[in-house]
Length: 259
Image (cartoon, rainbow, N blue to C red):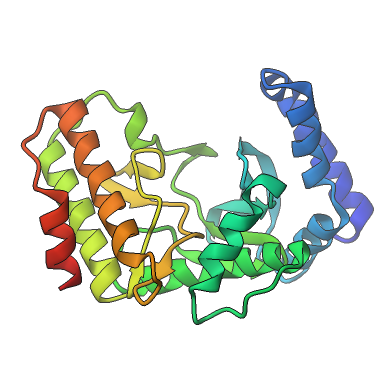
C-alpha cells in the first residue's frame, strides 16, 4: 500500500461490498462506522502498518461495535484481525476509570490520547496473558488507534462465540478450562478480564479463546476482586443455564483464586 489515496480506495471497496450488511443497522450507525474507517487518524495508522509489512491486505468488516470496528486482513503469517478503536462520549468515564487504577498508564482526559492508550492497553494485556498461557489471540502490532492480532477462525470467517453454540461435546471440560484461564490470568499475568462472558469467548478447534481484553485490570486495581467475581459469576451461570451443569460457587472460586 503506497499512499493514503490507495488505502482509502481499498476501504471504499470493502464498504461497498459490505453495504447491504451494514444497512441492516440504523443509517446513523452506518455513517459512524464508515466515518471511523475513513478518519484520517485511522487511515494514517493503517498505512503505517502496511508500510511496516504488518498488513498485506484488508478484506472485509467482521464487526462494528460501540468500542471498535474489526476488519479481517492478511499479514506475513496469514489471516489477521484488525481492530480500530473508538471512544463514545457515553463510555468516556468508564475508560478513564479503568485506566486510573492501572499503574502502567498515566491517566489523561484527552479523547485522542485515551483511544491510543486503550489500543496499547489491549496489546499489552494480550501479550501478558499469552505469556501466562491464557488462550487469547496473539498480539502482532499496535499503531495509534489500530491493533493487529491473530485471527481466530478461517477464510475470513470468525470462530463462533459461546453464546451462539447450542451444544458442546464436553461443556464441563470447556467451563473448567475457562476457569483455569481466569486463574492463570490472575495468578501469573496478574490481570482480571473484567467483562468476561459468553459474548467474548470464542470456540475454535476444540478450545475456548478469550477476546476483548482491553478493559482487563491489574490485580492491584481497587475493583479487581469485584470484577473477578463478576467474571466467574457470568461464566458459571452461562454453563448452568445453557448446559444444565452443576457449577462451582463463584464467590468461593474468587476467594480461592485471589487468596
